[in-house]
Picture 1 (cartoon, rainbow, N blue to C red):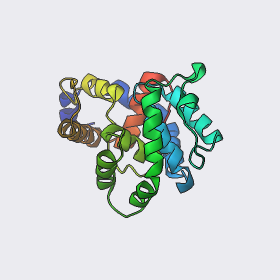
Picture 2 (picture 1 turned 90 degrees about the vertical axis):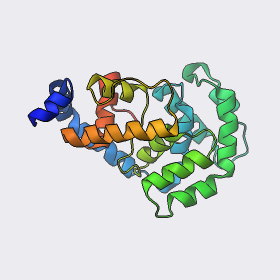
Picture 3 (picture 1 turned 90 degrees about the horizontal axis):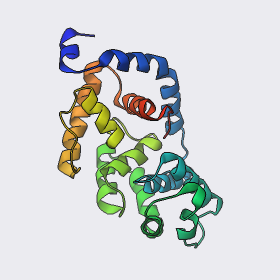
Picture 4 (picture 1 turned 30 degrees about the vertical axis):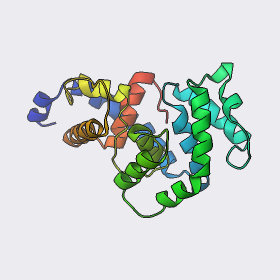
Length: 215
């Protein structure tokens, strides 16, 4: 790696070693995302509604239960399905209401995903039109269905790693749209500079934090 890159950033040796070890598994996971069928998009969006303030594992369990009860096609109140001891979902009452609202507009959401616009425009529309979905959740959803195209999922794990490696100076107190796009640009520049595709770097950071390559 060029010396100027090593001087600009921090602790790249360990990062690159981890990437070289996990690259095959990371790429397999990204291929899994690209292979998600359109019929499964609804429940991938459900999953992204669950994740704020809740673990990925619990969110996946809630997603599975909602699928088992055919939430997409039946008139059920999802609140009781989110309020379970073995997969605690924070703010389950609010999230249940948001899921019901999302289901009503899912036809428009699906049409937007298929309209040929860029990932950037798709994310913008989702964040502005689907209640309960911000830039982070919209990007997460697009990544999980293979339509991310280099956009960044900026959660606390990612931001902490970007600070650790000197790509950003400090952790933001809040993530406004303007701040999100600014930090996304720095993440994209960091990924470009060190030669790791941003989607792969995202999963590498996650695996560094959790020991697993989750979604």
